[in-house]
Image 1: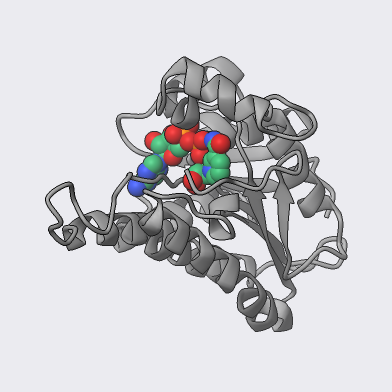
Image 2 (image 1 turned 30 degrees about the horizontal axis):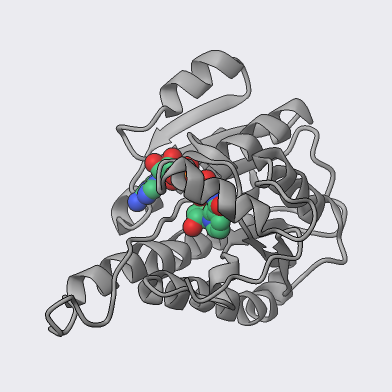
Length: 255
Ligand SMILES: NC(=O)c1ccc[n+]([C@@H]2O[C@H](COP(=O)([O-])OP(=O)(O)OC[C@H]3O[C@@H](n4cnc5c(N)ncnc54)[C@H](O)[C@@H]3O)[C@@H](O)[C@H]2O)c1
């Protein structure tokens, strides 16, 4: 599907990979609606980019907020794309230092955001896209965000790895399910990208070591490289039902 003049919702669009996607799609002539938390920089992004960008303050885990935000977005102009970037992890171990079992909340919270949140935005995006007339063969395109942790979860990532593996697992059945209404679904599994999520998470020397461990190129990914792949997935009509790693050939070590 061509990018110019289409309307795309980008969740988590106020920061990191989502923000880079907003900027790239906007440069390519799309209208973009950012779904992000009320306390995010969404309004500032709108002010900076100007016309063709809107911000909806939405918690993607909230059923009513997401339903209303999609209703409003689709009423403004037909919704053709969803790039779903909102998500995060929270380090946890199965046993704490004293050998006690982990709190369920640390597991459930990440699953709630990354798995339930993904399904929540997927279902409402599909509902609105299914009403479109086909454009370049598609009624809509959905791009989800997993992580290489879906395949090589590290110690401390049991909740995050399980949640991202669930997104990889959703991709093919979602594409098969929505094929009858002409909606494509792909997932991007990023390696290590220079975003606030990663840069604020660890000591600079640990981040440097992580970058050095990437075979080639030995650097963190540029968020615009993620955005470029998201844009390509929207524009390439044959991509469907697939998870694409973008990671400089990194395979994460146990820790
Ligand atoms: N940065 C990396 O190296 C990397 C690697 C693999 C996967 N990822 C995944 O990419 C996605 C984006 O990560 P990022 O690095 O850009 O992070 P980021 O923290 O820079 O941006 C995430 C955005 O999501 C928003 N968000 C969080 N919870 C939300 C909610 N409940 N409702 C609405 N918005 C919410 C945040 O406000 C923020 O603006 C995440 O799913 C993350 O797991 C990132």
